[in-house]
Image 1 (cartoon, rainbow, N blue to C red):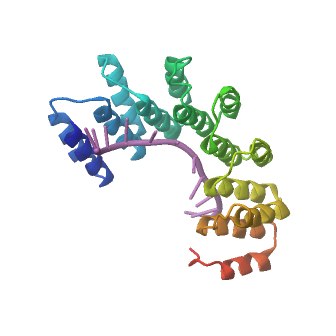
Image 2: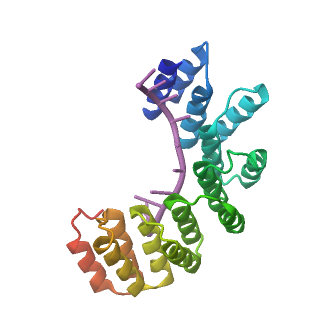
Image 3: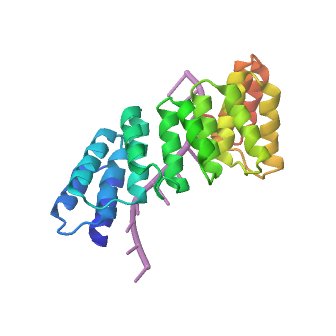
Length: 235
RNA sequence: UCUGAUGACGG
């Protein structure tokens, strides 16, 4: 089983979904990892519909699932903005120990956010018992993505109050939110802060956010300087 | 002693 599972993963990473499926179909024994490999491979390969179909089959036949299976199907729902399906699947595990796992919770949170239901995302977020940097970053990113820059920044300030350490991915969303909200000084402050106080080296994405922040605010000279001074080949 | 997993920007 371990060999088959590994082969499936290898073919999927190479983009050979057919070969992965061929290995799967020839396996005499399968475990929850085998099924999750198939679902995860489809979900991450932009084939969310297939991922959900395989999961339906899994459930109908009573085949084994685990924590990772659920993360994968919520990811599939998120990528397809399949809110009704996501809600139904969430209802299946509501109140269970699975739902209270932070990685599953983060996948559910992200599903509601990506489906555009920030009210439900926030409701779920508020009752999560464990929140990590991914939970906060997901909320910030989804608020920013849906044009609620102020909510995104408010979320970030709450994260700071709760003393959860933001990482480089959190800052991409924070800088983006500052850009869309026209908060140039605040964006510059956090760009500086992440380097000096958290020793996070800005990557190309951070610099691009700063160029966007300055350019959007009409500060074209400073935006150009930012492009010239960044330690990366501008893309 | 192995396999699958959750957060990201601009155009």
